[in-house]
Length: 296
Image (tube, rainbow, N blue to C red):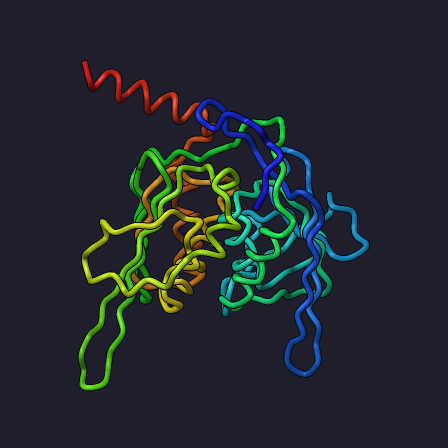
């Protein structure tokens, strides 16, 4: 991935959009063809889905409060009656690539949503690259601990200096042996500057991390290095958290998965005012100030 920024990432983290429009076409079962085009968008506009021929302002914002159904996956909708299913892998790819603003033009009410589609989306974004925008990159700073539980597991979001995502996966092997694996990904919110192309071409598959060894972590952009079983769960988590509307400075942990679980977490976080909107620059300045005070 390239960036036309030229910015000093130590002092200013900017918003990013695509370098140019990216086209994706996938042939599905029964000869159905999925088509979408991801276009650059203005700063502070976020991610928005629109149908072919529609005006972007009548589209569906990729936000937690646009979710109208969680049965069988997240369904986004707007007051005009437009709906869309299958957005999570694409939203995860946009977040991993560091794209803050984009208009996604789609044909039909569903887009491809397998973990393999996430990989195609990420490659598509790496091919067109990103461009920096004038506005500072926004950030949601977690200020309180929130935990939700359901029959599928639990998810917890707590304050952290960076974005830290930890997932645990439990499987039952033949003979009744329980296999527990975990993975941790970390982001300092500088994905556009990190060189995604090199990561996509150079990552090697990592063995499952032993249970409880959450100290072993990878940068968010190295998500493809995870085994597919764990990568599927992490893509699901990151895609759902992208519905918060901005990157999150917090530590999210989950055991289990499901659209309802993550949607309940977002509702709880927003409803309790557990996040504060800021910028990456301001968040870093605040952390440096706190570190300086603690060092006295």
